[in-house]
Image (cartoon, rainbow, N blue to C red):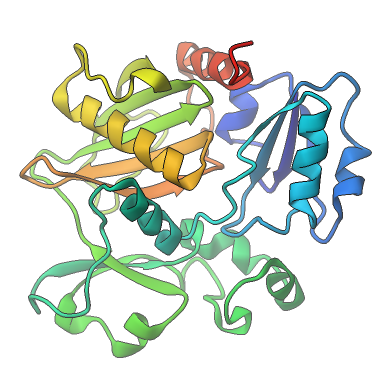
Length: 300
């Protein structure tokens, strides 16, 4: 097993799921031959684990790398997901035929809206890049991005408080602020053929999965995500929505965050292909995801 990673090792879920994997640290600007030369003999699983919003050029000629690996009989995970920006996530929701969280500029002036960076995780990793690196990787207006996490913090604002510059900016997105009185939140973990839906209650304004939070987890196969069986309705809904969006976005490994409103309608608000884990324990969950990830999608 080989994990091709950029800034996503210590404290991340994937190394905990695949503790014996060979780590290949990505070099920004390298070509596919550079990566091939570092893949261990006998490798049968290769996972892209690039902690950036845009990864199509990591490495350059990425499609050639994927083609060569598959020609060698290697199962490649997350080959097709190269943009996890907030806009791309909501476009995937639209393609999947599920509700989107995107907020229109016109509407109730008093409606609370969520202002986010278009980049994943407040654009923290993008802040670490040089301007030439941002240009090389294809970021829009790379000279005018938030310069730190503090500058990229999310905030809730009334529609009539959102400045025109935010609506027009390539680096900010405005979404509906989805919440519910029960503070219910779902995180869905996907790893190849395995899916785990974790349900938590978190009263924070911005829902996350802090280490140690009490969770109820439900284990299923991705092929069962559209068949609720004995699952609670909200869990079945989160599984089905995540499965549909994963197909639309070509995600084979990652985490999906979903929030429901007080009517029980679910909205997928984030997709992360390098979810963190810390020392969060749950060895059964890790083993289940690992088994799903290494399983050959053709049944081997």
